[in-house]
Image (cartoon, rainbow, N blue to C red; front, side, top):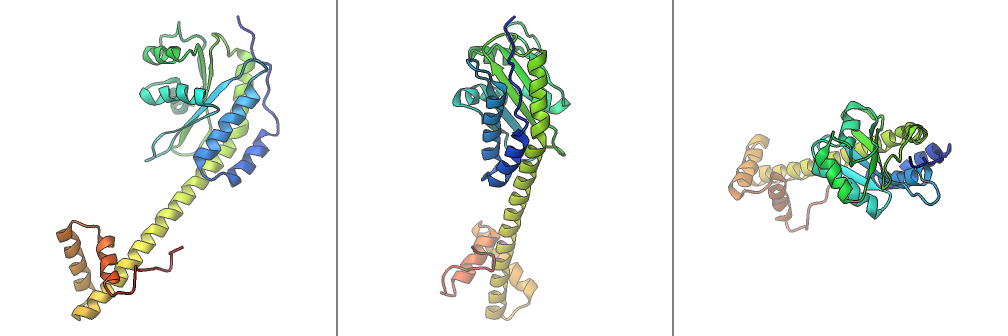
Length: 247
């Protein structure tokens, strides 16, 4: 049997990742760095680990991060099947181990695909996240029987150390996206209110009648209500409408 790694996660990795959460531009940026940190901490000299992370969020496309271009190509296999070690680990919250893809019969199509990439052993470990968000750390090796008990312990320790940082990154991403959506809604609503006021003044009608005129124009032109409202405001000849929320 091939020897296992004697690598052990750096005890300061959690502190480093908490700082990274604050400095990353988005959750994908953070995940790519996390995958690289995993590779550095779980590899040994002369036997570099290929690491990837899959993240599934509600109403969001799956995010795949990786420690290298090679790891990313292998991780893309996860997106091609409905059942994979990574998906299973995320869903049932259990570590999934394929000692040798040539002899594993649980995911035959998946095993065939990773074998085509030169991968012999796979380890998938779930992160402990919140709500419907799911994520897994995927470790790949070209050696069979690569992930023995000692390596499994180190990998589970790494996931335990880093799950909190990933929860924070996902939470910050959610807040950022919510704020952006709210800003867009407020800006759209403000332009519509401005257009309604203009129509009321021009037609000497009620607010509801003005809004109905705007909706009818939107339906007739097959255009978004916001676009029709912006055209009404722009028709005053004072340039594009600016709202209180414009940057």
